[in-house]
Length: 436
Ligand SMILES: *Cc1c(COP(=O)(O)O)cnc(C)c1O
Image (tube, rainbow, N blue to C red; front, side, top):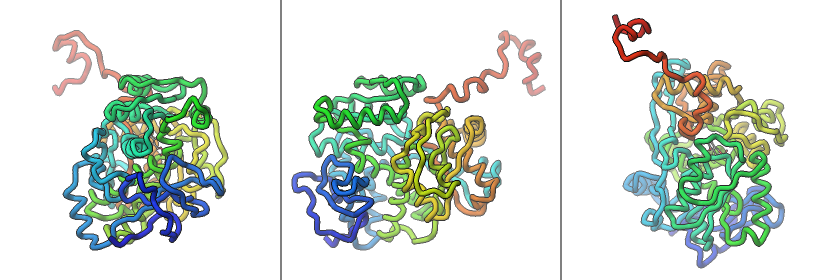
């Protein structure tokens, strides 16, 4: 089969590790210097310490054939297996089969925001553990299997811990995950209920992440696959499926504008990678698109750097209700800045109060109860439409990456019973809610 290199440099000479079958994944390549490495549990370039990403030998040939093959595939991310670092028989293995979540045409929200060009909410609360993290974990599980890891682990702002716990349970692997000790109850329970080990660390996410990096280099963590550390290049590829699905659901068309939440920034950079791959493969028409990043003001290091015109991101100490996005030192921050600037997009932030208002706006307008990260993207969309930065006449997609049931505290104070009454018609009449 003819091949084409998509990520990294034009160098196609590095051979794939012979006994590791991760489908079209050919090698790891350094995002900074382009050096290539055999597929393995590596995450940093041995020469320049740059982040590694998966380079592919993707199918060439008629786009129409590939499109048909994808459309005939299962209703989950495995329909895109030819474009992912997974073995061809991935769909037959025990896993949670995330993805192919709804792309909701949000006409009510569009009216509220004054958007006329078509507004869509990609609702990833519909995944097995109710966040987008099931996508990235599903890919990391395949890498863990390929490299012979028997324990799955991660540093998490909450959703990832639940996704890893559930995926490990289904795959028959042990799991031991690490979270900041003060997360929302819904996230803690979701992470614990699948029966793996859950460890609360007295510190914020950046402390948890630093701890995990130490554990990887220590015999205590031997044989452990940390999905977002030593399996990070594979994990990240799961986010490309959001780009694939959105384009397929729009009728194999790129959106004009997309609003994506930023924690580490991985998801945003990989959605851009996914769009670029679809263009290169001829599956969508090559037209300009703008990528907008969304943060909460209380953890807005990327937004601050974007507004200041900086190329580097100055770490912050997070203080926001949007805990799933509370990464003060985002690994992919500089790449997010590049992408926002290259595509003509922007990075913006909203206050916690605006997050709460936006969660309720989305719920009231579309019947979608998003988590705080969804409040961040909807809030930023509103702000950027009002500022004239997002063009209301163009097709716009907003991501809701998690389920509001996991972050009830954000809205519980202002979402209560309208009235509490005795079970009598008189009492109901007195409450002033009756139609007559
Ligand atoms: C993890 C997460 C994100 C994005 O994370 P990145 O680290 O930027 O890839 C977005 N929304 C939710 C709900 C998450 O849990």
